[in-house]
Image (cartoon, rainbow, N blue to C red; front, side, top):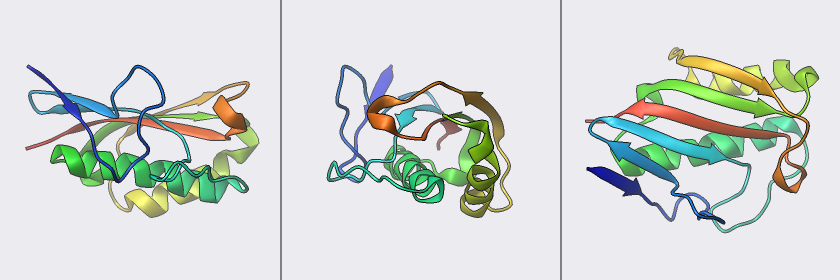
Length: 125
C-alpha cells in the first residue's frame, strides 16, 4: 500500500503530486523549492534558498516517521554550477556527519526563478 505523506509544516503541493509518498519503509520526498510553509517564496542568496528547501525536506520526513539522518539519497537541482560550493557548505551543515548518496543536476532554470530544488529518498520505521 502506498501512503501519501502530508504536513502543514512544508509548502502544500501546487500541482497534482504529494509532498511525499511512502511504500513499506521507503519515503520518496517530492522536489522541494525554497518556499516557506505559508507559501512565501525565499528569494535572495543560495544559502537561504538551500536552507529553506532542506527545512521542507526535513519537515516532510519528520511527518513520515523518518528524518534527515535516515536519508538514503538526494537529488539537488541547481541553476548554476558556480553556486555549488555554497550549496555544499549549507548541505553539509544541515546533514552533519550523515552523508547520503547524492546527485547534482545543473538545470537551465527552475520554477519562479528559484536557484535550487531538492528531492530525497529515505527509510522510515
